[in-house]
Image (cartoon, rainbow, N blue to C red; front, side, top):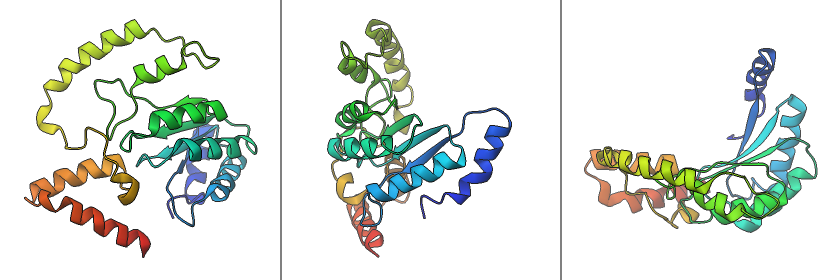
Length: 213
């Protein structure tokens, strides 16, 4: 089970014992088993266990604006902890989902500087900062200062071109195959090493059969 609570108990106790921040994550996916009621139950257990923050970890970018708003609203109605949204931009939905989640009560979102963002990474920091300007959720972060960081790391990225995967843009196939961003880029590299990259869609199709079983 991707959301086994008991596996976390010892770790949470250890974190609290040494005065550190214990953030516990709910791994988000979609299936008849993993619905909002299921995730709400997990969050209540994690709060009772002593977690300081609850994260919604959406590795594949499956959260839609509607499902994000509904899930965060449901969690906020039963827990008092900060809610942290983590979603990859693979499907092209994460930025929209972040906005709905923030409006529903999420207090933390994960982003990436645009020089490394989007695709299998996270929504661009600069874009989210701009989207929240002049709202009650304004971050106060200086966009001009961010642009200086962006310019620097855009050049840094060029030095590592040989490590780039094919998954640097939006790939809506993830909405069907549901393979997380980090896994899909690793899969691409593994198939490339075996000279089987042309069979990627076949492998992703097999994943659907495995999930169904």
